[in-house]
Length: 80
Image (tube, rainbow, N blue to C red; front, top):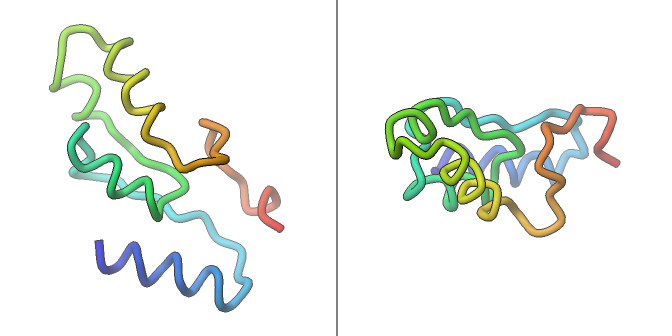
């Protein structure tokens, strides 16, 4: 999470336009921490290895997104 925190800080300080993505190790227990700094979470294992009810898992992960998040991946042009 240190790299994620650093990336988010640099994004804010420099005004650079980039999307912060976390790919790997995302599970329901780690998603909330990662969502605090990431724009995109890649959660294949979180969905397909946690429960046979994929829809419920996806809904649970969506509830963890940052306040103001849209639930869709951002593009660099979305950021002002």
